[in-house]
Image 1: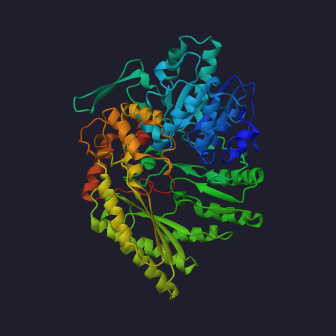
Image 2: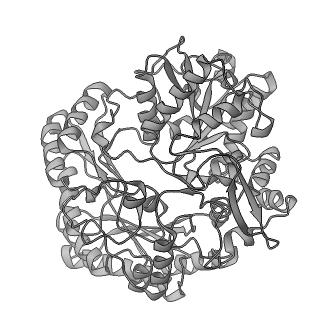
Length: 614
């Protein structure tokens, strides 16, 4: 960024976060329309986000448009920026945020929302939408958390709902036309123009009415806009130009490797999974396209690892052929292939064996719950025997380290279900002994606190209270005091605030603003998160944790987010909530028949047969 002198850079951590000029970055100082792609976390996290790599590439392909990057400055630099009155600027041209045409934030995690307000303020942009002046940028939000945009409704001008590849370029073209026509109708005129684009949500065009008990009565349009805004879907991923010359950073980042998206969506139907619902339907890239992309990415970046990215990589229909071809062609270049998400089956272990030919790493599986009762409740669709068969194949092929992911605090959970996690770990270690004849299998158990999310079957569920969460964590911690077992867990307070914001309405925005004014920054970082500060912010606005996070929602309650939809029907989610309470399973529509979620019909997407009977 401009304004950052050598003295300033020498006095802060990781100055390379702020210098720009990386290999393959694109500088277009004379662009007619400029958007700052803003990630509300530090450079190392934001540079790992594939979505912005794609949008950066697609926007900069257009001659008259420029996409630039900006990340949240760490607290050490923020202090100096405020002391010296230095504005937040983009990395490419040093453009102040207030001088861009658009600033677009991705909503990846609810506890990054105070960083959004902070970045707007540092960039010289009025934080509240209603106070924003005619010459200020339009603030956009998108990403997975946008399916409940209401807690941020006071701060952004409009939201992009769903896949952004096509719609963002449409928005920029609409702006170019509006600007060429001398901005008819001012800011409101442009918002009315873009609200006609499918997938655009303008919160100021909707009024919220509440009952006396604080629940939502209804959300009604006050303009000529759709009552429900449905997400945009790119039906054919091969039709979208995927970036093959992404920016290569000067410093290490969280995912410092090639990220190749092999498909989008998931139909397993896990009842806790927000992404599995909002990214439907499944759309695959062709094997031929992926092989071509991989060659270009290796050549243009110099990375020695390709990560095959999706919600469940092992579900890609051509995975065996793809992995075999990639590992064969890249072996001599010492480029490895990694699968970040594996199913619990021996097939996946065989695939993992092949991809680990270059460099071997540990295996990670996600049973999610310890007992079969709980796995049926969450519709995981796997048994303990599935896991034991998978680890047996792994141990037979030389693995001695396993990582297992679980959640605690799930609906209908008992202490026996939690203790079943420890029993499962014992069975894994015993299976290692049976295969190898000796002990020594290292098992890492990671247990997150369950957070109910919008557009899942568990959106009606009341989250466990703090004391109960801690009790369950300590119960499991004591049960896992075994040799060669490591237990990882996080403070439950962050999960509570995540639930408050995830299921919040527009009134929660007042608490977000108050928390930010009181110093909240980087709330997703444990050393910066202040639960007491958030409690005070909620109390000051007469809001409560219990109302948003811990209260069980009534069957007919109107949710704050239902006027913004991924296409999954409420009736389907209601049925899934009922089936969860009965412990009944729902099959995967890609391997069985349509289960009636409503996405394909509502969004008009043609169902593609990838091997099942969908």
